[in-house]
Structure formats: structure tokens, C-alpha cells
Image (cartoon, rainbow, N blue to C red; front, side, top):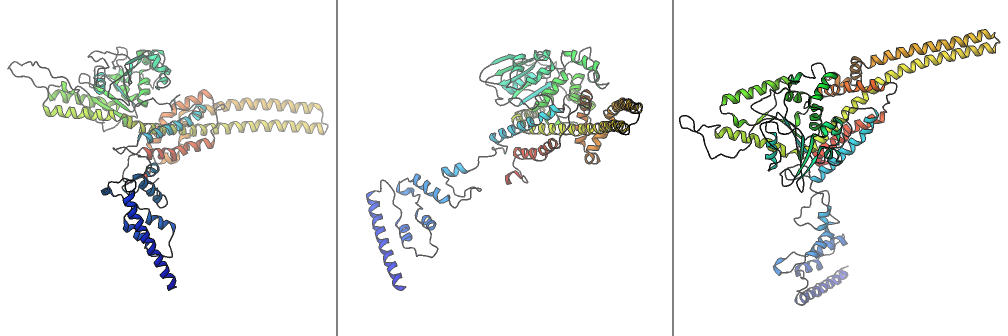
Length: 606
């Protein structure tokens, strides 16, 4: 054994000597091509003691670590990248970020893309993925909605091509001026008197182009084809303005006609709703503008990402139509509704401001069923300074508002502008929320409708079983009479009695079935069906389910009455399971993808 060890040592010494000599020769002859490795690395690798666990991987690790020595003026980056890649490929855990400061092309390709931007919001790639998944899920429930004549509007699964901000309010409240301020250029005509009677869509584009209403509604890509349901009068009172060089490059702004109380509907808020919305009140509301203005405002508001409701100091909440819009068209949209008291710099005295602000709060309290009023943004738009000044009788210049008050108004304007600029980011949350509400509406519609239909179907089949039993009994008795050679008069009498009895029973059962259908479709029985199908929510006094039921109760009753319970389609358990799966699995998954990173978030662990 000692003999073999001495032979190995002498052989190793010879190899080391030859390697050192070759390295010196290489460094003198071809130093301009490749940098030679340091001699101590060759010596350590050659003269290392042999061990029993020696393997090819340890040899590779110990012999290919070429140095990044910039002092010699040589660059061997390609070889270094290749060698480091070969080294990492067998040992690196790709589920973790590399601890080394240098990364190779393979490392970059294997790293996951950045999931968030600098503000902690999802990246554009993830946002597009969320929008696509929401669109697919919404489209998947539309066939069931059509089959059951559900509460979802036609084409409700199709959103607009860009997020948008919707402005509504009194005339001369500063809506058009605010749009011009946000866009950074004059687009809308502003004035004290009503200047526009159209819904104007302002969109970014490569050049200035105007389109009329039929072209806007007929465009299959921009997403406003749903306005066709409100009639040709509305279509002709919409327009599109495409403008270049505006600030909102990734969202649209929609201006609405200023609201005015006409002499016919001076009652404003109570007109058309005091009696529960009868046909006469609806027709008068439509003839007021030639179309259903409240319905159109609700259509825009449901699809908008930010809704601004403008008031002005001259009419702080006294326009009945504005309050009616707030009550009936903007209800349930508090999460994206901003109430703005504009032109607050026009107040010359604090007493005037207090009276206008108090009047607005008083009028809002009549239509907002809560003790706590939402925040009212009191602001003003910047106006150019005038050189000429008018003096009062004593020679002093009258002051409007001091600098501190103006600074507060400017801060409120900055807050409103910041919310407007968040429209693209809010589109993700609004789309998921819309999907959540749509599935809940359709699910409750399907569950209650199936309960009512099944009860009707049970009663109908009971009647049919009675009639079929009577027929079988009569045929059996007639057959027995023939079998026992009973006189034909008896057999004929049995047959006649059977026919008359079954016919009378069918007439009686049909009349009673109509009474049962009317009873099942009454408001009381529909509410009982809701309580029977949602016992846990009723016991917990779940306000969300109560609000959903209030939204679908009347449309559900109308659809069941028009269709008839005998012709209403049955709901399969698999269809209800798919809806529940969207609520339990798909929507929470989308929420996690859209939520920003925070402590306690579980999306980083997925």
C-alpha cells in the first residue's frame, strides 16, 4: 500500500510540474487571446488529496471557476457565463431568487416576470389576464341567463374598450370645465346657460375626430352598442370626440346633459316614483327628454369606473331631477361615487358658504337613507388672474377668499383629480365586483325560480296522476265487464262515466292549477320561497342578500308571469354548482391576483 501511495504522489508531482510549466508558456504565448488561470488554482486542483467520494461534479466545481480579474485587462464574459450556467443548472433552486449578484441569460429567462409595479399594483400583464378571465366567466353565465330570462342585461358581459369617468350634475355646475381641466385642452364648451344636450364621450386618439351618435353606438369595438335599447332619440343625442395630446391617454371621460327641472316635472324627485313607478309616470319621465334619462344615467354609471356628481353654489341640491338621479340611478354605487360642490371660490363670505353647504347636506339627507353623509368635495378650478382690480367705496380691494381657504379648495381639487386618474386601476376591481354581483343576481334568480317551478310542477303532476288513475280504473272496469260477458250497456256506461269523470276532473284541476300559479307568483309567496331557499342568510339577517333579493324580486315575478310556470325551464344542479364554484373559487382567486401586496396576503404563497 505504501508503495502505491508513493507512486501516486510522484505522478501527481509530475502532473503539477507540467501543468505549471504549460501555464507559464500559455501566459507568455497566448495571453492576448485567453487569460490563463492563476497558478495556485492549478496547483491546488492537481495536488489535492484523493478521497473516496471524489466525483465528476466536484471536479467541475473545483476546476472551472475562472476568475473575473479585471486587473489583467482581459474579458472572458462569455466563457464565464457559460461556465456559471453549467454550474447553477445542477444545484440552483429556481423557486427562489438567486443570491448571486450576477445573473445569466438563462437565469433571466427562468425568473418569473414582475407581478407588480412600483406602487404595488398588479402589472399590466396580470391586469389583462384578470380582465380576460372575468370576460370569459361572465360570458359563460349568459346562456343560463338567457334560458331563465334572468336579471342580467343583454351584452352586459361586454365592457367598454377603455375605462371611463362619468360626470353628471346640474347645468352650469362646472362639468365641462372640469373635463377641459383634466384633459389639458379645451374640448367641451362651457357656459352659464345649458350648452350641450348630448352625452359626449371624449376618448384619446392619434388625431382629432368627431363622430355622431349612430356611428358611436354602431361601433362594435368601443363598447356602447347597449345604448341602442333606449331608442333612436338617445342615439341621436350622443357623440364621440377623439382628441390627441390630452392627459388621459388610458381612459375616457363622458359628459352628460345638465339637469334642469322642467315646468311639467317640477316635482322632480317625487315625479314618477311616488306611486311605485306606474306606466303613466314612466311615460311622462320618458317624454320629458324623449328617452329614459334615469335609465341611461344608470347604464353609464354601472359601467363607469369613477362617477362624479356635481353641484354648484347657485343650486346646492335644490334641483329635483338631480336628487332623483342620485336616489334611483346612482343607488348602490357609493364605492365609486364622488359628490363635488364646485365653484366654491365664488363665495365672498363664510356665511354664504355655510348656508350653501348646509342646504346641500339637508337635501342630500332626504335621498340618502343613512345618518352619515358621504364626503362632499368642495373645490374650485383655477382661473387666470386678472390684471385690473375694482376698488370698493373706501378705496380698498375686496378680497374673495384668503390663501388658506383657497389652499383647502385646491387640495380638494387635487384629491378629486387623483381619484379620476385612478380610473384605469379601479377598472380591475370594478370588473371583478360586477362579475360577483352578476353571479349573485343570477344565482338567486335561478334558485328562487326553480323552487317556485318545482312546487308548481309537483302540483301539476299530482293532478296528472289523479287523471291517469281515473282513466286506468275506468279501462280496467270496462275490461272486466268484457271478460265476464257483462251486458254491453254496463260496459258502455262505465266508459262514458270514465270519460266524463276524467274530463271534469281535468277541468277542475286546471282551474285550481291556475289559482295555485297565481298564488305562487304573489309577492308574499315569492318572499316565502326566498326565505325557504336561503334560511341561513335570513336567520343571520344578511343585508347583502336582502338587497340582492330586492333587486330581482319584481323582475323575477314579471318574467315568471309572462312565461308561465308550465313553460319555464328547469334549472339543473350542475348549473347551480357552476355558479357557486365561480363565487367560491374563481372570484377569490381573481381578488388575490388584483390585490396589492400586504402583510397577511396569501397570493405570494401560491
